[in-house]
Length: 224
Ligand SMILES: [Zn+2]
Image 1: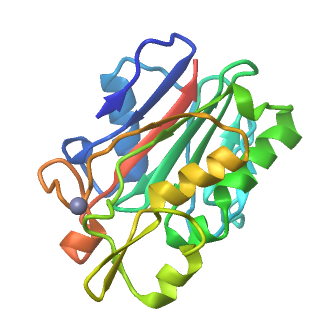
Image 2 (image 1 turned 120 degrees about the horizontal axis):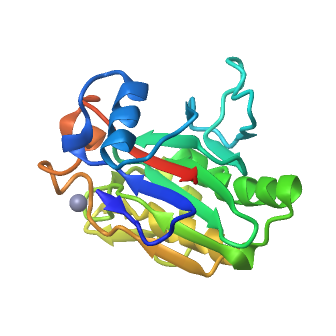
């Protein structure tokens, strides 16, 4: 579990396998937050369809028919969450204006540049500034394990370091593409949890390794 407790205005963290108690996502997040002593008014988990839509959460929450892969809010005590099991979770905090965002970015969302869409939404809705943002890249599948076909690799060939070739196989590092996008948007404070979900079966769920969904890591943010 990553948890930065040094800020009293922000809760942000990524769960691990041991924090997954049931197939009920809300219950898992509620338990995790309660264990860490955080009270909340509501929890919103992104619907996640591997697209690039972003929703700004207010007091009313997200309409059922909106399919988003990123959530943004400026509201206190509203937890926003994405769930992953190899895809890259991104947590964004605009420290001056106190705006937060969580992003689910697999290769499709990364290709569709959901990172830029989210930053633009934070700027448009709240006048957030990229230079005041801190990004945390949560646990995801590393290039050590993420072998991809040409149909995936060809989308990222312009990004230096995104594709590694070993023999006749290609491996994708999503975090390189996402860091590139963050940089291009002016976000320079970037931290990354380096462990690979696929290489660490005791710690993380991995769709690629397990061949099916056994559970998820949750990446959670809340303004306090
Ligand atoms: Zn690995």
